[in-house]
Image (cartoon, rainbow, N blue to C red; front, side, top):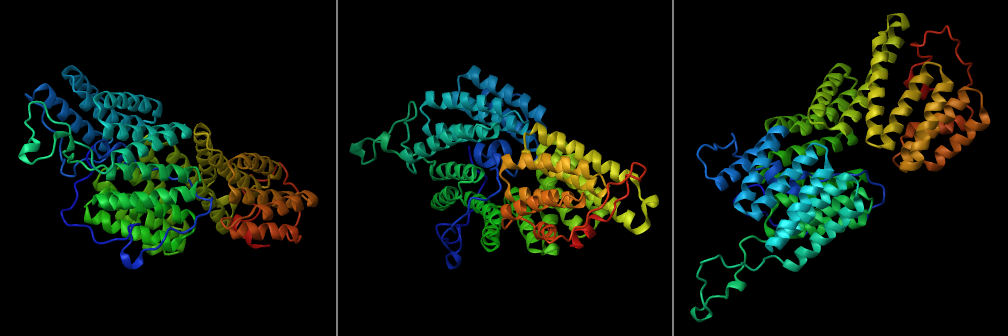
Length: 553
């Protein structure tokens, strides 16, 4: 399937990793701590189903079209409907196009539609059906002797398997696709068309089997390597991911595919950001943005701007981050990408929460949640509900501190609990232990603030058990620090010291300083015991503002 239309101008000279020659550097050594990142459907399934031509403003007319022409038009319309998040309409058109191509005996067209429909299945959250579509497409490409198509189908099935949770199967598919493209080389011999007269060797022309195919395979090979690199990041094989990204960049550069180079630079920037390599991430994002702008890829630009906004937030450049988020949101809105809009709104809500702009932060979270629900994206819903719950909890505590409990709005507290309950249910369905632990710890904080030390300890211990499985050292350390504080407040000094020592032992560079300080305060005896509150106490009232409680050590 074709990539996005490229600009006619040649790409500027670059080093093998896609950096300008003056700034090219070898890939830094990487640690094994990196948050999982997913690749995009457009990169793995091809651009047709997910992006398509930027000039498509309206579905094509199907009036009076011949069956095969109608099939291609239906496929084009389905791709456009999918980009507009009309899943039902896209599904109907893919099914009808598939039936027309089957009746016409066009195996390759069937295979392409099946890959497109696989992308739809993933959007709908049914990776099992996506794998089935890829299986059928793979068999059709193999029967037709289209080895490049076979590689595309293997790459697409690998992505679908990864989404299904079959990571071992995904690795096998990516490896097979990469080996196939290595065998094909950059160009594949062109099969003679039926009835076409090929020049004979006497005429000085090459034999039919020696004619080069017009479509180079370097970019397809690069996409397979990039997809495997994304999976290796998810599996925390960061050195392997770095090698795949570097190889993919070289292939994309050789193929003149600037969009492919940009996608790898964006992915490598994400990996470097997760490693706190801010300089390397910023360089990758800036260069990726330049390439996406040169190819007029608005979706690509929006994704990089959102990522650069995240980086600037981490660096404390909140004004710069907000500018990036605003630009990304405008581009995602123009291209009607609901998930992109939702992700930016969630990030901007987090930023505004940091700025204590609570009203606008809640507004962003509300909009993000509605969009995530429209796109059936449960992980985004869960993360947004958790963030909105945190904000509503802080809002209640702030009002109680300023005007007293009697004037505080109990609905803030009730809404925070509702958000936490919904987020927890979603994380449980997703089998996301770290997500569940984060919500349980937040609810534990709320119980502690209300004086229910027994309830808080129970919630913290549940979070701890989940984190022991997930392997998130920073969150585990933070939870142990809260367990230590709760024991100290309850007067259990032996248990408090043991938990504090474990917290410090498990702390890594990602552990927030406040939790290190909390554990040290417990060990120094600076957390004074207090009595459990009686039943008549107003349960809405925080015994002390949560942020003050952390600053009293």
